[in-house]
Image (tube, rainbow, N blue to C red; front, top):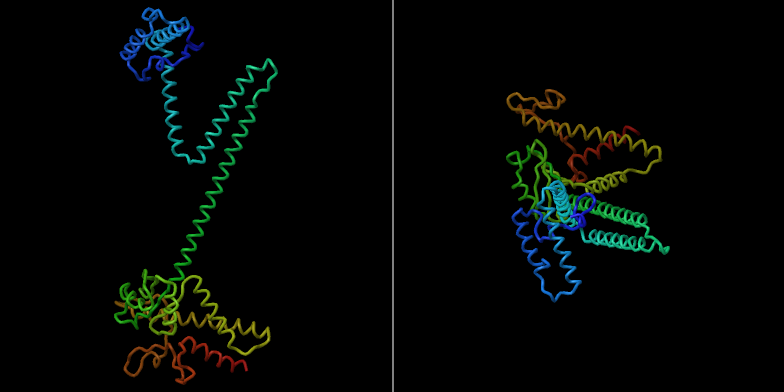
Length: 377
C-alpha cells in the first residue's frame, strides 16, 4: 500500500468508496465486496480483446481494491484505520450541521454563500494555474484580497440585517402606540356615587345596558377597590363623545375622556373659563391667575375629601373607622330636626334662572368670583 498511501499512513483514495460500501460496514461485508470486485477486474479473468490502456486501467483498479481491503482488514493498519474512521465521522457530523444551517438560511444568504464558494473555487483554480505557470512569470491570484472581499461582504450583509431588524422593531412600536391611541379614543372613564345608585353598585352587565344607548360596547373593565369606577371601550370612536356629553352635568355619574382626548377636553375647558373675566394688566392677570389656581386646587381637594368621606361613611360597619379624618361640624350642622345626619355639600345656592344648568362646581366657581371680586375692591 506504499504507492497509494500518504506519508502519515492514510490512503490517497477512500477505501470505502473503492469497495463501494458504507463507512459502517462490517468485516464480512468488506470481504464480500472485495471478492466480487476482484473477480470482476482480475487480469486473468479478462478477455484478450482489451487494449493495453484498458488493461493498465484494470490493473490499477485491481491494485486499488487490494490496497483498500488491506487498509480496512490488516492488523498493521488498525491504528491508521481507527483514526481514518474518526475523521470520517467528524466530517459527517460537520456536513450534517452545515446542511441544517443551510436549511435555516434565507434565500439572500444562500446566494451570498454560493457566490463566496464560487469565488473560493475560482481562487484555488487560479492559484493552481498560477503555480503551474510561475516559471513563465505568470501572475498569482491574490488570495488575501479575496479573503478581505469576503469579510467585507459578510459585514455588509450583517449591517443590512441589523438595519432591517431595527426598522422592523420601530415599525412594531409605532403600530402598538397607534393601536393604543386608537383604543383610548374609543374609551370613556365612568365614576359614580354609590349612594345615588340603586343597590349601591354597578356591574359590567348593568353598565353595558346603560352604555349601549350611545353605541356598541366592546369591553367593560371595573376600576378601583371601591367599585365605583369603570373603563368603557366602545366599538366606534363616535360613541364616546355623546356619552361624555350626556353625563357631563349629571349628579349620579360622571364620564370623562381617556388619553389625548382627555387632555384636549381639559385644555379646551380651561381656555373657555379663562376668557370669562374682564381684561386686566399683565401683572394683575398673572397674580389673579395664580391665586385662582391655588383656590381652585384647594377647593377641589376639599371637595374630593368630602366626597371620599361621604363614601367611606357608608362603609363604616362594625366600628370600622374611615381612612380619612373628617372635620367635625357643629351640633346644629351635624343633625337636623329628625336627628338624621346631614351633609354640608353641595351648599344651597339661590334658585334663579341664571343658575339653571350649572353643576355644583360651576356654581362654586361663579360665586367665588363674585365674593373674591368684592373683597379685592
